[in-house]
Image (tube, rainbow, N blue to C red; front, side, top):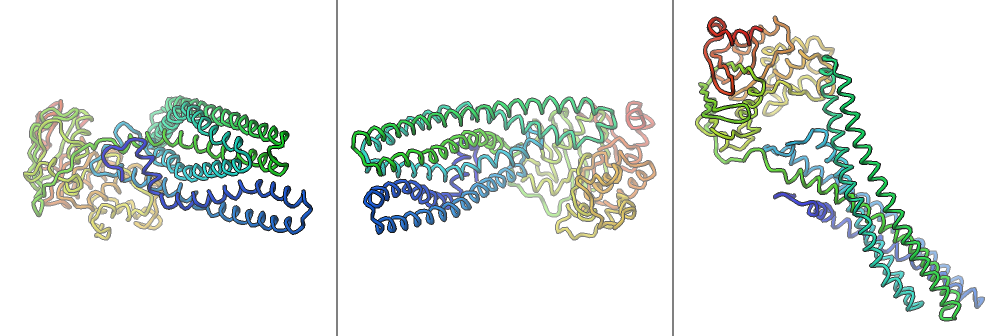
Length: 565
């Protein structure tokens, strides 16, 4: 919807434009409501002049029927318009959330760079809701403007000076309102930014709560959140103060303007330029004007906050992709030969590695950053700064990210489970969601986990799988990766929370489950490395040693210290 790096104003226009029909319908009904409401004091003035002053019962009855009709129309239009207006705001916000979701889930990535997951969630909820509210505000703006025009026309018919006073006085009043809204816009942007950061920090802390408790870092975590939350509170209070000052200033200006209209009308009545009924109508219209002005004040504030939120949404939508989308095709079937030539990225320095199809290779990285950057490149979450990674002779950068990830599945150490049954989690990576998961469950020993649960594989898991222990979660996550059965599987530290006996069983079964399928085990586990065909040692971002696990343990003291420590 908003490709090519949109600006905040474009986001705002798209949100409103997407609800054009609803806004137009609600605006028409709102204008009818405002028109009828503006005519109420006019009709009351006519009743005074033509019925009360003359004593005509017939005229009184006729105009009372007209007045009842006005109330019926205005109340009906208000109810229908309000329902459509609220719907337009919800639909506009929903559309923005879908657009943000597509950007965040874009296989090329990039939207999450420099942003915590909680911050993205806050943008997709709070900011999207604020921008969506501008669609409703547009309806109120049209209705309020219609009320002002109708009031001006009615006052022109009563008295040209009163009508001109409104026509000439409203534009400067609106311009002043726009100037007054600028501090609110600036502070609203800061408020949303601080609130999003606080949400991100909170989500980050909750996700790592067990780790924090384990290392006794709860105090530091609480202090960090307190500082972030305090900054968010200060920004919110400043924005609230700006909103209060904005609304109060606009209300004061409006009150002065209405008082001037009333004074001019009273002066004209005293001179005999208008009748008593016309004076009542003029005063009633002056009081009625408070409603349209309040609507326009509300609209001004909503647009000020909406513009600030739209800028934040635009920043996410305009984020450049982390990787490019290629158009090359892989050979069918994928053999699984992986070659890295001179790859440099992050901690990787000119890495050369050639992995034969169907081999089970162990990768030992002394620096965790090296392992992390290798996983990012193999999974096409990032492309190398230098060098090339090939799969069956095709550079990964020439492939569509989705095609590359279907061929090379990277199972990260911190992979989360989702809320659902254990079986649903394991089947999540299979092509049709109905594949036989028995071999994968057995190889990862997740079948033992299932047998320990009340309903076996159909047992529901809580959010992030927190109803399981750390080792159980790792085994289910490994089963999910194995069940996907990709041509190339990259597994990072899959057994760090598993006991030694279970780890040895997993090592033996992994080799049996994936014959002829290329598998990387990025780990320092001796049990897993002993089951591999070859071990590659990475130090300083490049290969420093390779061979069988047993030989490296015997001959390489640095390797021995790393894997047996």
